[in-house]
Length: 613
Image (cartoon, rainbow, N blue to C red; front, side, top):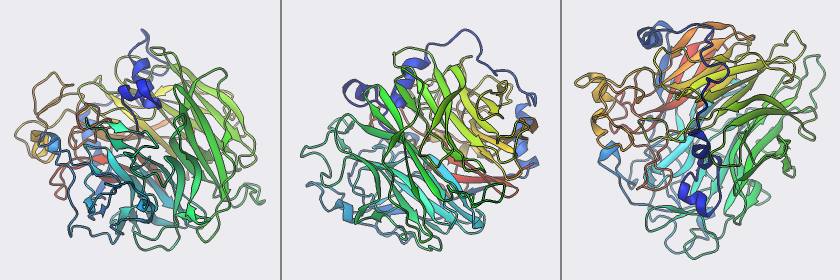
């Protein structure tokens, strides 16, 4: 996600993540539905910490296995170091080991004087992630992430890391090519078609830096980096089945980048895009699925304080190409509302496609959000809904207590694959609730196509009152429901310990949002782990929360600044990856810990695996 400055809100386009802080501080008095309703019961921090070992979780640092470089469209030399480990942009030299094209690139040909950068720059940080499994080969995984050359300038493309051995090694990595002529490519999310072609849905947009380091999105001026391309685009890049290099991507359609929608003026800013592909060749009754290989691309269009959700479709073809994109269509929303976003499409075995739509109030300082579900039974031609999941959800603040990283997507969504007693495939929604002054993850299910929803339950089972946030749902082939989330129940490592040294806590010297002493040795509600909770199809839990991270990490280190190098708000991602392959749950998330391969405590992508109950 992007454009999160409150100053930016006052003068130009608003995205949802700038709206959140204005509604999040008006806390309601009572606990929200589901808070404290923990069917598995709480567990001690000691038991949770040990669960990484007792549940035989594995961790692999994926993005430290290759060194990537690219030539950014807009260079930015400011360094915020040495605090938190920042070091500014670094010229690549001979560091690249990915085999990717180091630039300059075709889409940079029309750049204004001073752009692009004069030399390739080293990719240092990798926050926010998505991970997918090839339906033709369960050992073939592709993860995608933001690929930062400048954390201080929030300067990144999208990158990918690819494994052919189930995630043990990540032999192919690099930035995703085709859209280097825009300042940023953002919001990593992808999907495989049934042929094994991988589709990355890309949001590419332009900005340049003001003298104070803030981002300027003005178009049509000499300062604009690249007037030869549209200001903002929703596009795709396809990594075809059988590709074995970092540069093997299909990125053009009809002689230009593979645009789904383009926006080239103030008054329309796309954001928060998501993608899914229907890979069900046949319906459960054995008849052909008419929606087989339909690609559903969704995004939100922001205009002032208004935001509207859109969908476009195409059909994936065996050679890694696709049919023409349909005209973008407006999705159903709650009547007379202003802010609708967070589209998370999923397809059930009958070819019905569903998505959540989350509504936020237009009036600043108002409470709260409403989560609904839309669906289509005819391949996205017509849509039904919205069917309300939950109302009056108390949203988290933009920035959680003690640290400077901002929160992300409010909710997550998944569709089951075994029929319910009511004759439909289950729908699962989890969301963040801040009604008691800390973040909790709450969940509910529907077994009648969204008409009614089960009594909400709390997913996180911590005893201490700390923040649990950014849930991500998925459903395994056997119907087991998996909810992964970020977790702050464990204190930061103690001074003088090996864990504190490898966590880089000594680098954390200045933090305006923390009232305690720094470095944050032993700090509570500060450092981060990732967790997962498993349920059966009717949300009966399997055991307790499982710790997915082997080591606790500090979110302050090398955290990209979303507004400018001199502003406070920073970033670990708005979501992270969670999927399954056979009997294994696979998650991808950020860590700044040094496992021996990350000596500068950069934001790296860790891939965790654990057996599915």
